[in-house]
Amino acid sequence: MVDALAEGDRERLARLAYRYYLDELTQEQIGREFGLSRPKVQRLLEQARQAGVVEIRVVSPPGLRLETEARLRKTFGLADAIVTPARTDPASQREAVAREAARYLEARLRPGAVVAVGMGRNTSEIARFFRPGRRLDVTFASAMGGSPSVDAPTNPNEICRALAVACGGNAESLYAPAYVESIEMRDRLQHQAAVAHSLGMAAGADLALVGIGGTDDECTTVRSGCCTLGEISRLRARGAVGDVLCSYFDVNGRSITSELNGRFVGLTLAQLRRIGTVIAVASEVDKGAALLGAVRTGVIDVLMIDEHTALEVLGAAEPAR
Image 1 (cartoon, rainbow, N blue to C red):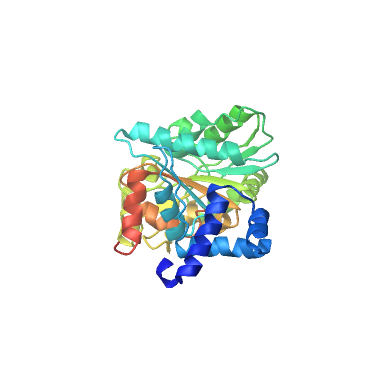
Image 2 (cartoon, one colour; image 1 turned 90 degrees about the vertical axis):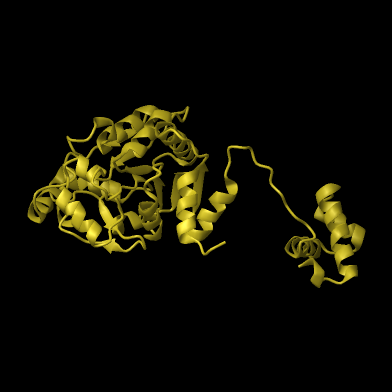
């Protein structure tokens, strides 16, 4: 702190900092003026910042939530977090989060990249705003099977196709249901050449784009007919609060196994962890517990989220402020 410095030291740091930050002299020029080496000037400028002699303030546009994003990164060890301002209309909120996710992808996709894609409304909404403005040699691969009971735009094959069309890339479809009747049937299906090839491509992806599901009676897996009300009720009873690619977890991020695991056709959490960057997109205000559990799994690297839900998740995770 500043008070721990002697008066002469504090004055010296202030003069150095003034010449550097306000007079815009180079470190080399300051060194000549004060009779110091350039590395010494660099160390003193860093000391000035750490001691509070220099305070750096960033004036951000009204739509940015930089402090909340920084708290998310620090609290959950995320590589990045993008927070959009809260909106009262759910559709408008979903659009805002999807727009930011699309921009994030546009800026980071490189030629030859493979993106594994999950299912859901938030994930599908990204394709509406994904417009790189240039052709990208990128492949979007389905990370899980689909369901005829879910609207076509939210099925992973359809999302992959929409994203590929937007950038002139390629879509690797997985022609399989999300859930089958038994473990034996799942194993036979995943050993078929076409299915194995698609899942292998998704597993070797550079990035993954996923949503976060809940465990209420109206959750996607129930609405899609992939699991029954009884099955989701049993998962809740065991502490499940949400899922990523139909892998369920509790609020502390611990995996919850069930009969559904053996019937699911798609990437596992272990496979997701091996993908370089996993981007999760969420905008529902009733998924605080699911989001908290998801980021605690350690699978999520980048979180796209609305401000209201971000603050709810942080409030549940951080010590009393």
